[in-house]
Amino acid sequence: VVKALKQLAVDPKQQGLKAHKVGTTKFGEKWSASITGDLRVIWDYSQEKGKILVLGLGGHSGGKKVYR
Image (cartoon, rainbow, N blue to C red):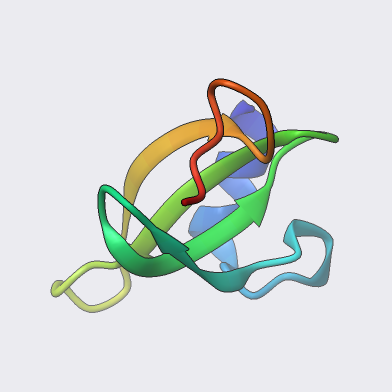
């Protein structure tokens, strides 16, 4: 998790993170990045230039999924 968050901080669009827009029930349309096989981080660009805001961590599927 720490490695993925560091990569996200350096380059949110890094190919290995597989970042893409997703619809979430809790946050609306935000960005998702892959951390491990099923674990995802939901994030968005901060209003402060050069920063991102981590909104949540959870599964891609199952009971703890972070998507709608």
